[in-house]
Length: 250
Image: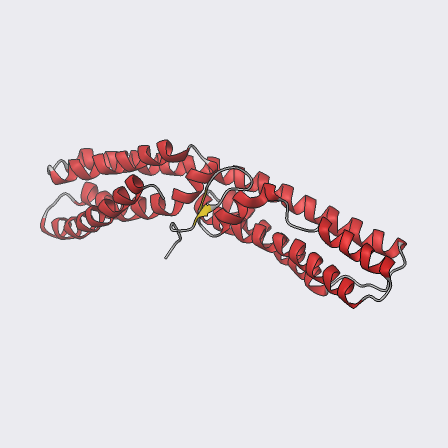
């Protein structure tokens, strides 16, 4: 994560915690229950959601500019609170909440499209592999873990879509990541199984066949961004780029 973003998050942890605690105290001591209740709730929830969305915004959204805009809105709401302008502060927190939701919904749709494409590709690969090996009359059966990974991935994708429909995009994003992770296992299981068959084969033609097939199931570099994002890491550079894994959820 960029140094500036780290400092912003560190500052918000301090400020957000302070607002959360003070708003509880002031709510108990004053008659301004409505605005202070909003400040109390959203000072915690908005901070939590901005933090959870950071990697997704950088990897699939509008980048640091979009992230910084949400942070600045949050900070403005906090500033109004510390000036004892509770109603404007509550209004700004609600505006921030709305904008966080809109960003999350847009990004969740991107995750949905990408995950469904990955599902489609994995099922095609699995089907073609089964047919090709059957036609080649090789003594080979697909590893049962492949079916399990596809089934688990599809269940998780359905769960993500359900959260998305129910306007819970941040939860949906978490499940889309899990679904991708399960689908990517199909590639690694295929490759490992075929290389093992190659190592065990005694016929030169079989060794070449299994090695050639194994090479086809290396996870394509086009998924490097997804791999980094699945670890809640900011993706760096092109297809061969590295991830910045310092931004992981604790």
